[in-house]
Length: 343
Ligand code: UFG
Image (cartoon, rainbow, N blue to C red; front, side, top):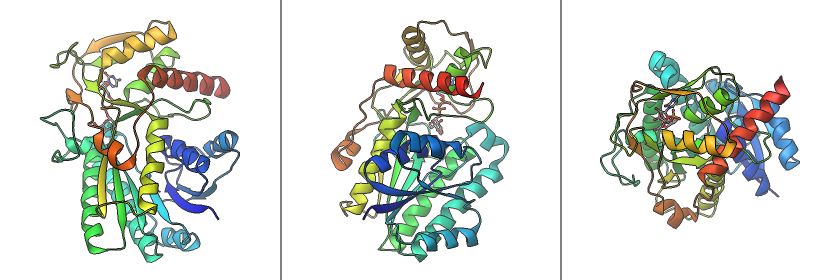
């Protein structure tokens, strides 16, 4: 019998890549998604890649009663991977209540429903944003968390605090919070990838949409940071590497290897690239010229953020394998394939 896992937000960018890794590792996946920032077509695309159509439930996790009913139906699941959340930093500054309500209600309802039905393992989709503006780099999991700049980021920090309190109160409950750095790239098949709603906030989709002619030009937000070329440095990680880390984390929970009821892991490569590094690499691998212009800083951006990766390596047995060029090529392949299919 396959082990059943519930994946909330499984039609989204990181969720869908993780569902593929779970299926390829012989898990039985139930996706819960309200399709607010994703499409049901992803299910067929997952089937095309893996040969398996995952079970799908269209559900808004803010609906407490419906969430309980679905967890009752799937109470034979052994774990939950919780991706479902709103994630646009800028929008969260404009609409903080929408973000606190969505991201925290859905978390609380999921935790209550799973606990009521005896599902004790939980993986949370967190973010490096919980480190705020760090003084020491690379950032280890021992770094104090700080209040993030955005309401979106703060929902991640508050969620980790909720998990901390809850894991102390319920000895049966085991959780791992995965702090993502900057996921980019797409599945090598070109079938699934990042599909931002409207104008992208993040660098890589903005680059690929500019190259595809959907955006006129990329604005580079500031070149006066204290970095080698003045543009901010980030730890870009291939989404497939990131997805695989969830399977390692899940196995740690299922095999009861965790040392504390709530553990935190950074998911990054440990290597930092500047915005101009990414642009230059894009131009090089695609042999094209990108239309970009340097402009002023974006509020809330920190100069440098990259991960210490030792803990994930030691405890999960996982490291990121894919290089920046592979991330860029797969992002670009996905953008072109998707645009060709939809035009
Ligand atoms: N950037 C540009 N132009 C753009 C978009 C981004 O110059 O059009 C720059 C940003 O200023 C930043 C870098 O590219 O220096 C990366 O920006 P992203 O928006 O791609 O990523 P962030 O590091 O700002 O944000 C990511 C995640 C968030 C998370 C945050 C944690 O997207 O979910 O990391 O630090 F909160």
